[in-house]
Image (cartoon, rainbow, N blue to C red; front, side, top):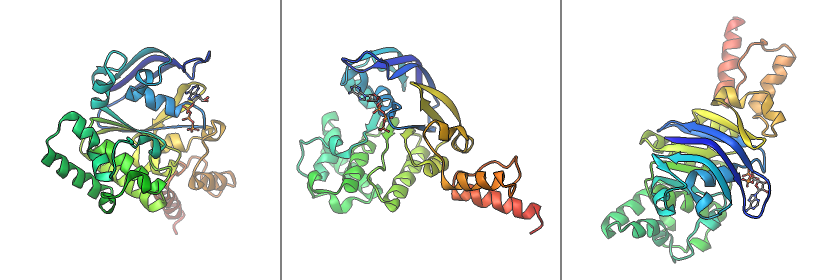
Length: 285
Ligand SMILES: Nc1ncnc2c1ncn2[C@@H]1O[C@H](COP(=O)(O)OP(=O)(O)OP(=O)(O)O)[C@@H](O)[C@H]1O
C-alpha cells in the first residue's frame, strides 16, 4: 500500500540529504507510528509520503515512492492528493485562506472535486459532528484557538475520504481531552479501512493506537517493531525520543530487582496495570 524503495532527499539549495537510502513498507488498513527526535526528518518524510515533496517543495528526490498504487513522483499533485491526505504540523498553515467560515473551509476540497452541494452539506455536517466542531461551523477559521484550528485542519482532510491519511503531530495544539478524541477518531477511521501514518511524540497514545512503530534517526528508518516492544526499547533514550513514565518506572523497578529481569516493559497505563497484576499474582498476592 505504501512502499518506499531507496529514497533519498535534499531540500533545494542544500548540499546534504535529510533522508538517505530509506526503505519502508506499510500494509493497507494499518496504523503506523513514526517517531524521531526533533530535526530527524519526520515532517520531510510526511511530505514525501503525500506528494508535497517533490511537487511543492522541490529539491532532489531519488528512489521510488508508491502510495495506494500511485507512483508519487510521476503523478500530478492533484492525483496524489486524491489518494493521500496530509494533516500538517501547523494548523494555521493548513487553512486555505480562501474561505470566510469553517463550513466553507471544510467544503473547499469537495468543491474542487465537483461534489454536489447537498452531498457536500451532509459530509460537512458528518465530519463536524465527528470532531465536535459543529458549533464552530459559522465562525471564521482565523478567529479560532490553535486547538480549534487543528480540529478544523484534521476535519478538512478526513472529509476528503482518501484511502491514506498522513498526520504530522496532529494533536500538538490540543488539550488531553481533544487529543484523546482525535485518537479515537483515528481508531474509527482505521475501522473503516483507511491506512494511517502518524508522526507523533505522544508515545503512550502511539502504543495504544499504532500496530507498528518505526524510528527515524541518522537520515534513515533504523528500527521498527510492534508498538509496545519498540516504544519500550531502551535505545529510545539514545535516539533522543525518550520513554513514557510507565517504561521509566518499570525499568527502574527492574534495575532494583523489584520486577523480574525478563518482564516486558510497559509503555501505557494499561500495560503497567497488566505487568503489576501478573507480578502480584505470581507472588500469591
Ligand atoms: N525547507 C527546508 N530547507 C532546508 N532544510 C530544511 C527545510 N525544512 C527542513 N529542513 C531541514 O531538514 C531536517 C529535517 O527537518 P524536519 O522538519 O523534517 O524534522 P522533524 O523531525 O519534523 O523535526 P520536528 O520534530 O522538530 O518538527 C532539519 O535539519 C531541517 O533543518
